[in-house]
Length: 524
Image (cartoon, rainbow, N blue to C red; front, side):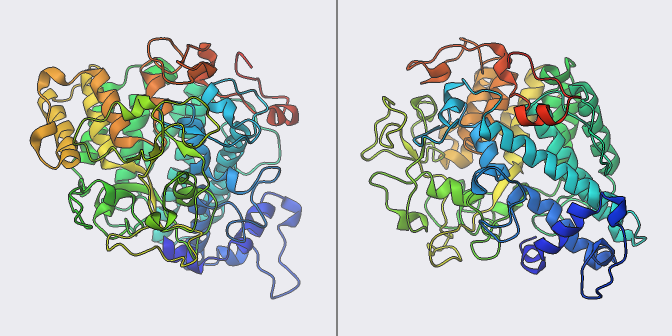
């Protein structure tokens, strides 16, 4: 997929995507040098280039690299990148992260007092809606090609669309379900309707996608569909009031039986095979065996101020040496709270924190030295060399959106919640992750230790800063309640509960003003 980014002219395909929905523009050009959707979809080879734009809608932000000709207007382009917004909404709102910056609306997220006009919740909604739009356009136009391989391309676009809707119902609840290019204002669908759509799409395309491990790195295969079904069913009780843990177990099993495997290659010989997952060569150092769905980044060819560039730069400040992270400087923003630090056991190599000059407890959110820094993501390869951008501005590290470790945890949780999994196997999966984390069996647990709360904490240890935490806490009814508190939850030093309407973000005010068919989520 990195190669697709290199060969793909984003501006041309944006032109097709921006104009294809207008019937009066569906004309052959007079100028033979102009480029239209007719050219983009002339054959399967050209269509593959257009598919790259569908994938890129989650990784990049515009037509000129990090800034210039943005896909979304009215917000800083780097701010609006998907995984950066995912971090802000699903990590910064939890015990996993705080930020020092004072951008309007940003501190509101950890304090849990955001409004319907928050720029960041607005940006994520529009980013995901745009991904749906790009997918719809690709699906409609590619459907005119008869090449057998195009059926797979369309299935991949349908997966990306389903993934976008998975995020939308997680973050916003009731949203419009739009599956065709249209110029009319959409109506609002229930969370249940969209849940069923995502489920149906994934079940339909599983056999149209490439077989396990056979697609190009960065493109999805059948295992991605099974994985997203595992995640969807795990959250069904919260999202639609149905317990579908048997189904989560079934599709988790499918994933676990596939060609993917937990990375155990300590490529940099530092005593841990966990950190390889977050290095600049994680597409080739062994980590790729574990990655089911990734966002691919390249410091030269796919530049953005979001993605891994954000996660590396923003987490560096204080006494930290940027060169050790393969970049030219830190942005002095992101840290974590003592709640996450204290979950890590002695000897757990997943505890990737920088404490020199940092205070464990946070007294002032805007001071970088308050809160341990996180060293999880680096622009350093396994051999110790820097990523491809010698200037140190942009980062090569790919971001896993779904990896096998998460599916292990899904299987264990669904089993303990009443699914028809095997408790002994669940224990084995957890211990496999812990053996990698500890380097031996010293961190292994027994069956009596395997509780739902233990799994939640293990998810924090294994998946922190990977865009999962808010969703997990909501599933446990811990996100808004007083059952579990962390520093500055609810804007209180020691943490406090907040109203449960905060389990959903608001539909953006601007979106509602432009579409009278939409109703705001309760509480906003």
